[in-house]
Image (cartoon, rainbow, N blue to C red; front, top):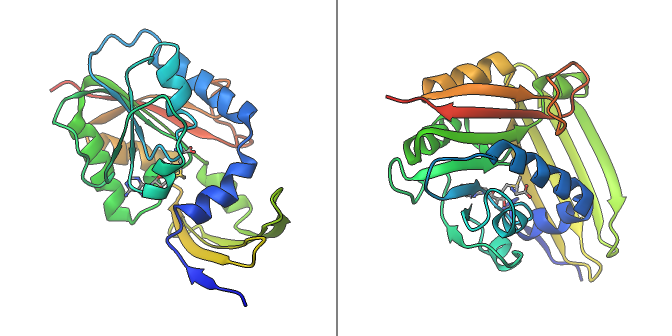
Length: 248
Ligand SMILES: C[S@@+](CC[C@H](N)C(=O)[O-])C[C@H]1O[C@@H](n2cnc3c(N)ncnc32)[C@H](O)[C@@H]1O
């Protein structure tokens, strides 16, 4: 008999279905990019991995390089925290009400559209929370996917057998009017257990994103279209923004 359960998207469903696609090489390149961003960081205070998941960035960043000994993971999901790599401290908490004192953080970063998997109003709250917790002049670096990529290919559907024999099925639809991508994912584990969940991710045109950041006191310092630090083009697969909390 098959047990089917509708679960929250993040947690076991997300980790079991996403980890097989996150090669160590990709993570290494992302970690190298973040090390370049935070090289020469002069401000004191922890640097928070916002929605650190199983810590694929936080663990290596806290171990060597400019952020060694300074990274703290922030994650709401207990299962992800239980699966995390050793080598960095983590706090269970919510991006929408950050458990940090005002002006206490030396920096923050968020990978994989983590800041934009909520409602429109919550995205503003999250950025306001990040701005509240950063020291003036501190950096926020985040990665997402360009709005234009989704607009070009608004629908996706696939089925894939993962290395452990699980079957992953996913379908998603992007609405260019709202910038919302609505997806449904279903994972059938080898023993027959089925995990399924839905997600929504907002993809912002760059001008809109810049305005949103500005309205929370964050000034855009750079925009990259790839981990190589190139400017965004119509062919870019990444949208990576470095923003600084304005003084005063
Ligand atoms: C897209 S995943 C990215 C995970 C990790 N940064 C990475 O790149 O592998 C988003 C992460 O944010 C976490 N998350 C979702 N909602 C959250 C919330 N309200 N507060 C804190 N973390 C949250 C999820 O559990 C998940 O681990």
